[in-house]
Length: 306
Image (cartoon, one colour):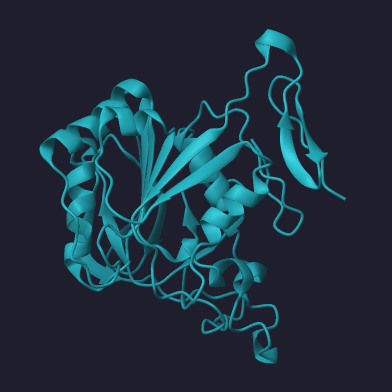
C-alpha cells in the first residue's frame, strides 16, 4: 500500500500506474512546484560500490515533489544555469573525486553563485571528505568565500561513540567507524536540522571554520577542542549548509550494505543507529525553506515532515 501524504494547499499523493504523483487540486491558489536539485561533482569512492543512495532516495521517495539532476562533469555556473534549481549540492569537485584533477571556478561563476543565493534565494549544501588530498576543498572554499564559512585543511574523524551506560563502544566496523552525536538543538534558526536525528556516520572529513554570524549545528568535543561538522548560514535571501563529510551519500549508510550478513553486527548496522533519510530531508528543507510541498514518502525509512 502506498502511503498518502498531505501537501501544502490541500493536495495529496495519489497513484498512477503504480507510481506516486503529486496532486494539487485547490484551484489557482494551489501551487506545488517541483523542488529541483542540482548535484554537482563526482560521487565518492569509499563507502561501497553503489554511491548514489541520496539521489536514488530523493527521486524515488519524494512523490514527485523533488527531482535531481546530476552533473558529473563541470557545468558553468551562470545565472541561467542556476535559475533552474532551488538547491545545489556540491560533491567531489574534480574529474575524479579521490585523485582530481580538481576543478576551478572563475570569478564570474563565483559571482553568479553568490547572486543566486543572496538575491534569488538559492540554497547550497556542500559535502567534503572525498579525498585525502587537501586540495579537494580548494574549489569549495572559493565558491563559499562570500559566506565566510570555510573547510579546514586537516582530514580527520570524530571518535567512535559509546552506546550504553557501561561505556561499551558500538561495533564501529559494521558500516562506519565514526559518528556525529552532538547537536545544537537550542538555536531556533537551525534547531530543525537535527529534528528526529540522534546520530549520523562519517569517516575522514574536514572540520569547518564558522564566522560569528553563522550557526554551528553539529560538533564533537574532546579534552582540548571543539570541532565543527555542520555549519549553516542565512545569506541574504538564501541559505548555505556546509557539512564535513560525504559518507551520508553512500548506500552503506542507508542499508548496511556489506555487513548485513555478519551476525555480530545485528543491531549495530547504520540503519539501526543512524537517521540518514531524516538528516537529508532536514538539510534540504532548511536550505530551501520555500519548498513547502517537498515531502518524503518512505515506509522503510519514515521521515518526520515539517
